[in-house]
Amino acid sequence: LHDVQKTQRLRSSPVCLPPSINEQSAEQTTLSSPTRTTTATMTNACVDVSPTEMIYMTYDGNFEMRCDAKILHTQAVEVEGDAADSDAQTVHVYLDRTVLHAQGGGQPTDIGTMKIETGASTVAVQVEKVTMDRSTGVALHRGKVMQSTAEAEDGVHASIDDVKVGDKVHVEVDADNRQILSECHTAGHVVDSAMARCGSVLPPSKAYHFLDGPYVEYKGKIPAEERNALLAKLKVAFQELVEEDICTKIAVLSKSDAEAVCNRVAENYFNMEDFDDDNVRIVTVAGWPCPCGGTHVRSTGNLKERKWGVTGLKCKKGVVRVKYGKDC
Image (cartoon, rainbow, N blue to C red; front, side, top):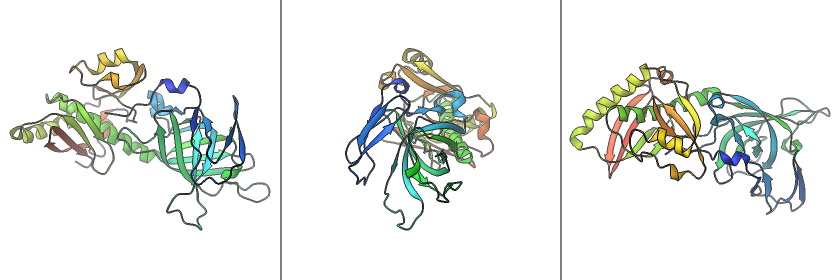
């Protein structure tokens, strides 16, 4: 149901990334790092980049809004729709670690900023999207280079061309955006717990934790004559769980432990064999554990201010969709 990053890949060997789009030069470029030097031809060769440490995967990291990192690779790219006369260059940036959540598991990407120290100046990047290659564990940060925060000694602003492998980067999440997205994701998990409290434990199949109409789907059926009563109960149960101010828990467990924790209520509610690695990240919201790679708020009580709640129930072709939202 929820996208969970492979925990073991953080310790795996470097992986190969494709070159940037519209890369014209066939000149070989030497990329250096503290542990290796790789030579890559930028037209069609690959660049070795180590898997990204996703800081938000731990409980404490889930609440960190900034971190320091190092540049592993940068790529200037051309994106359709970019104005030809725009000073804001689109770039792809690869880091050794990040606090920014990569889009996936039904949750939108974080947005934020990077400030890259090039020596004489600082290059500022407005991060618009973070994506994760699940097969390699490498996160790609896409953004636009804004004007540097300081001028170089010769009076010329630094650009992405001045950035080198190993340069220090200060990464910061847009905290307000992270907060509401985390609330939305947590509210989706509260729906799971509310379903259980109402005695409707159904296998989950899909979740959409975007702000434009979030919902959670389950495999199963609710008889037509019982739907209105269940919806009313879900609305009450959701608000009860919010009022109880139940703390969120995040832990990385072995498959066997995850199996015991997540399937104690209903057998085979989650199939741990769907996960390739030995360890699974388990998030427990409102007392309900679930494999999940997203960000969350500290407790169900944090959903009070924006008045999150259940808004609807729809059943069709063996799928039960529970809609939820804020301002309920």
